[in-house]
Length: 268
Image 1: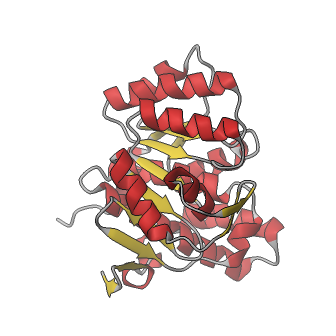
Image 2: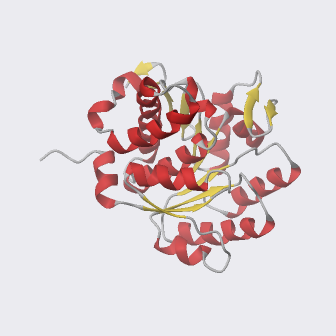
């Protein structure tokens, strides 16, 4: 009998995804996880964050709208998630935008055993300490070698790093996978990257045998959903609706892995 795919496993297991996230994207993130086949729980109170992490399949830490109490909740939940052996994903939104964000990301990486850092080029460059002109929480622009910066961050923090943009990359510090595809409308919806971090966490929870491949699959899946939504959308407003539908309706046949994933310039 053929082994079930990651997507089939996810929809069978219906992983509980614990999101300590930001107020801008919480609703979109929860609806996206539900559409995918996962089960979201948005619990950021310090009184319950660790308890929720203990029963969740994975935990996402998103620093988009920071406050000191949320940071403490992230630390408490993250420690329990690691003790339980569950994937722990960090989305360092606007990591270099303010001193508070920089300090928070530094603390989270020092105190927690992060499984995956998922961010844009500006955020990963900030963590790596390389020159880059980020624009608030947007990726910005720069001349640094982001692939090398990602590899450096992955090695330094013993985790996976995914940098998303026109071409996504994911690395464990040695191996690097590039993922093509997607559509420009994906950059016109707030929370698209934040939802992707949660989707990657969900796939990591069922792809424990090869975490880097699970992340690469999640990135390819997400880009293909964007393409399918764009075929029906007239603009950003209905694109968001069609995107949620695509997450719900897609199956393995909709994703041509050979088209989307290229490793070290060689078709996988």
